[in-house]
Length: 227
Image (cartoon, rainbow, N blue to C red; front, side, top):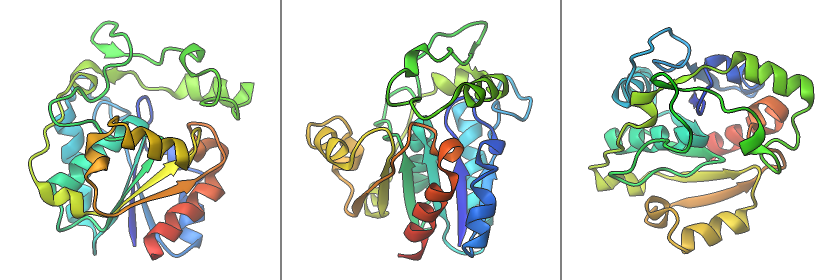
C-alpha cells in the first residue's frame, strides 16, 4: 500500500528518512512529502498549496493510500479525507488532532518576517521532547524550515461529511490513548468526535517518533495499513 507521510511544522520530507526503509521492508511503498514552503524553497506558499501537494499524491497512488499526518499536519491529512473521501483508505494522526472548519491551521507560534521559525525547545520541554538527546535536538533545530505565514494562518475549510466515514487511527506518542479519548469526549476535537471508525494506538515516545522511534512507528503504520 502507498503510505503518504506528511510532517508537521518545520519538517520536510527528510524527516521520515529512518521510517522509509522500515516501511519498505514491511512491504509497503512510503511516500514522504516535502510540502510547498517547507523545503522546496517556496517562501510564499499557502495552506491551499500544501493541500494541493497532498491531493496530487493521493490521486497518483495506485490504490487507496494511507494518509499519515504528524502534529499540525493532522489537519492536512484530514483535509485530504474531506477532499477525497472515496480515495483515502485510512487517516493516521500522529501526536495531533485536526482543526475544525473555520479555524486557523497552526496559529500557536509567533510570526517573524512573514514566517513561523522554529521557536527553540522551550515550548516543548517535558513529554514532547523528553526522548530527544542534545545531538538530536541540535540536528532538528538546524534542519528546521520556517513555515510561511500563509500556511500557519491559513483557514481550514471542510465541506464533505463523508470524511467522517474514513477510518482514523490516532497514534498517541507523548500522551496516552486514555487522555486522547478524554479530550475528544470533552469536545476538544469536534471532528474526531464525529468519526465513525476511530482507533487509538499507544506509542512510547515523545512528539517526534519518526526521529526517536522510527522502527516502532513503521510497525504501527504497517499494522494500520494491513488491517
